[in-house]
Length: 69
Image (cartoon, rainbow, N blue to C red; front, top):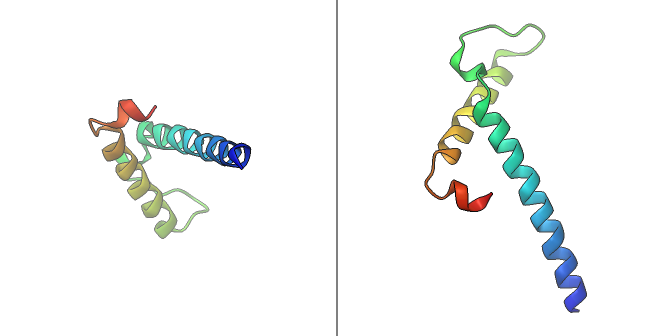
């Protein structure tokens, strides 16, 4: 039973680590700073990505962010 819990905790930790890396990369992306039209993508998709970038920036600027990494 304990081994199962440890495996699950390890997997959750791996997924959280991966999510944190994605958020970090999003927060450094400059797409949200530009008013450009990205060919081949719908404006809604670009706007959604820009919103995700802004959200990621707000997360990484939180005072608790450093303790999560």
